[in-house]
Length: 68
Image (cartoon, rainbow, N blue to C red; front, side, top):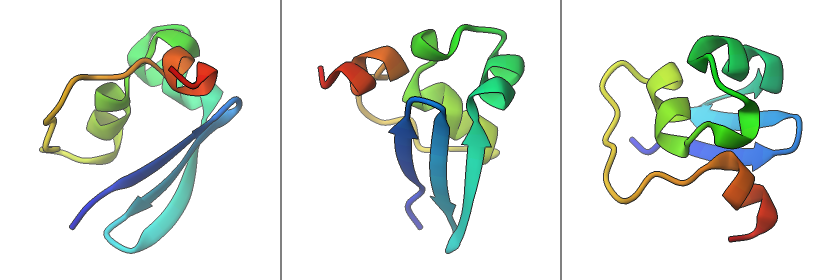
């Protein structure tokens, strides 16, 4: 099953195994010990899943929000 991340300025909406929930910006920063724009999508997946499929290049939240 695929995990879906919808990255926004104040956090990430997640759909994981059919369950929808939100990871707030503060929680992500605390979990990764990084500023939110510097966190990658791969790091967010590692918060959600115990053994995520980390295929492809990681993308920084700041780049995603900037549309890069």
